[in-house]
Structures are given as C-alpha cells and as structure tokens.
Image 1: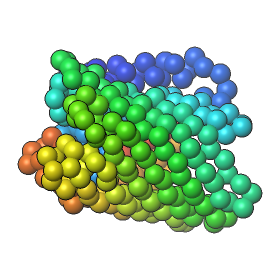
Image 2 (image 1 turned 30 degrees about the vertical axis):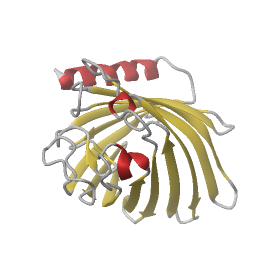
Image 3 (image 1 turned 45 degrees about the vertical axis):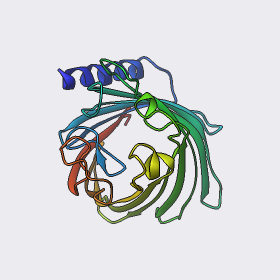
Image 4 (image 1 turned 135 degrees about the horizontal axis):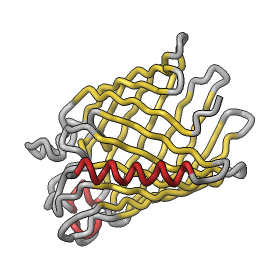
Length: 246
C-alpha cells in the first residue's frame, strides 16, 4: 500500500508535466534505496521518485519532488517536497544558487514531520565538464513537531563530478550534519553530529542515466534497525528526464 501511494504521487507529477508549457521538465528515478544524507528513508527498500521542474531564463526555478518513504512516528509513506530559488552560472564557470525547500510527509496520525530549509551554494564548472559544488542548508525546526523545542540544524555538503570518455563519469560527495538538533536537541544532550560520504560511477545510456554509488552514513548515531539505518550500502539508480525530444 505504501508503494502504491508513492507511485500514485509520481504518476500525478508526470501528468502535471505532460500538460505544461515549455521550460518544464519531469525527472523519474527508480532507486534501490532512498538515501538522505547517509540515512535510509525507505527502510533499505526500493523507491520510485519523480519531480516536475520549471526553470526560467532569468535563473528562477521552482519544483515539486515526490517519493515513497518508510520510517518514523506516524508511519509516513509518501514524501512531497516543494522548492524554489535562483541560480546563475557566470561566463567564468562560477555559479551560485540560493533557495528554500519545504519537506512534507503524509502521516497518520500526527505529529506533523513537515519542516523547511533555506540554502545557499557556490560552484565551478570547467570547460572539461569537471564540476565542484558546495552548499549549506539551514532549518530552524528540523523534524517538525516530532522534535519540539530548539531544533535548528545545518547541513554542509561538497560534491565533485568528473566526466570520462564513453559516456562515463565519476562522482564524490561529503556532508556534515550539525546544529542543536544533532548536538543536544533530539538526542537528549548526546552529541550526534556526523559525517556522510558517497563515491560512485555514472553512465549515460541514451535517454537514461545509470548510477552506482557506495554511500556511508555510519558516522551517524546507530538506530539499530532498518528504519533510519546508517549502514554503508551500494545504491543503484536509473533516471530519465522528460521531454525526451530528438
């Protein structure tokens, strides 16, 4: 039932995309495990994910993303994220990106797990296609009503992507979760700030992008179950973006 509800959401997203005007794209992804900052959000099970995105020539963008999930209080089964911001790439190859994202979870019963983050990032893309990016996220109420009190949290990330011959690429990611939520908020005074990292390889096969990554969040607090598992794992994904065009 949980996967069916998640699939219904992404099918709805695709319907929106097919009815929209130029400038709108929709990306569909099948992934062996929905990982968020080194922690599974689908109890190590596969997930179907989709987005609808609108990007204007000015740099303004807005989008909606959805996935099935399985974790936590209220037994949420669907996540839907609304985001928007402004990004610009300069002639020099340097870029910046600022925006906000609102995370929503369908839970029964409450508490509401909904919360929002603002973010800002900078990056550089060389003529060779090599890309390096850094981004900082901030939430004043990470985890929503499930974590009452002062639960501000930050996430600092760095990403590297290097194109290779034959439609191949390699990527690397490192992130650090910190702030009151992780240091002494949700974990009753226990310091739970942590690093996560990932390394992977990608392959562009026609209109599909395949990726194989090793993701490790084991520096995070161990919850001892498949729910919120922080174990290192290999994650496979297949993604495609509509419209395909010629």
